[in-house]
Image (cartoon, rainbow over all chains, first blue to last red; front, side, top):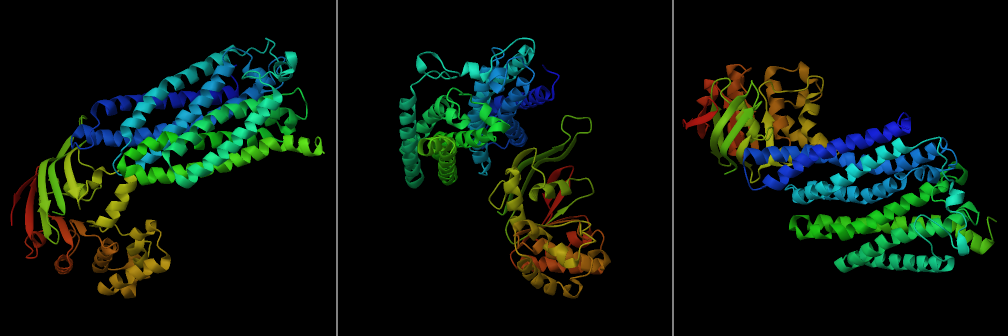
Length: 336
Length: 227
């Protein structure tokens, strides 16, 4: 299903980004072999000019790649209209073996690409390129992921066949055996999940506030780790538990239907803060090592504080928006 | 030394058929508060040397330390800030924008700094007075005389109060009287502690008594200190 505006847009985006990254990998090898900020040689001066252009292009490429996650979900929703049996993006993503792995690669990539962009911004905030080596090592690690992303995308689009019947979300996320709710991530009991989830949420707020207030590595570490775990837990809880209240249907647990018009596009307002809080919550822990480069210490400290603040704000937004239908049900008994 | 160039090489179009080796192993030191002239024929490498001192181009190799920093090798966003604070340019054709008024031309380097219009005008006022062009402040720059144009160019170079003034063939289009007037202004600025670097092959400039050093530039090499 390549001859389709969504497919073409996704392929073009992936192709361009991959091309930019592969070209930048050449620069990365040069940086690893020859980078010497103290030298006045022609090679060093040329390398300084080259990394400026290369890093800028990589930054935009990776930013577009992050956006492609959204594009991919929207495309899957669009494909569902063409695939027999699919009612939403779920059916389209499970139409062959590559849809779901591609989604996971894109989500994982979002964090890595974001980290690279943050490191790049820190690097160019100084006159002396203090993080050049680090960010180009990371780029070399990112390249295989981008390659996998593009390969999976091609395989996925190639494998989409309108004649093959796929499943709709009601079947996939419908009532499973023994009364448990089936979802993409596994099975878990209802009340246990919600209790654990809201306790974790409360812990996060406390850890986040302390990290923002005291700015200590141990607190960034605690908040970052707790946030990474929360991200998985939140996706699980949202799909397995909270989605039923959003749809007002006990056995409808689709992660994608909430992105549709009939649910007021509420999914976007839930997922965006969730991804934002997770990204901004994990980053302060990851960039803390950059404080060791004395020249960057004040900039990193400022950025960490800002990221935790944004993370807390997004977390609050996510908590309110995702819990609102559940709380409404709990206190008013349904949609009122 | 305010300006310290070591083993500077500048090659244009490197590796191509039209490769030009504009500078070759240049060593040059300029102390603060001095007036220096780079003397040489057209195509000798004077303007390239000024461009490297002025951080317009980075050298192909070598070390160019300007006011304590290797300015030309700074990332763009920092280079612009440092250059604006450190160097004032006076170009051969003055590069004045004819449709803008005299005042607007002078305050042009202040535009990206975020000063209020009132502050910009206040900074330009003393220079307009000093160089006798106050009465022309609202005239389009394209309608004033050559001598006034020259003074507008000087005022614009000084608006940020930079420690280094670079002038590339500043008298090439001026008559003798205006050339002398220009040199008198440069001597005055030197007296105020500014470092002046003039590239010229005009004998009026190269023989000026205010110069502390004269360097010959030939075939991309700084050949001698002729003072």
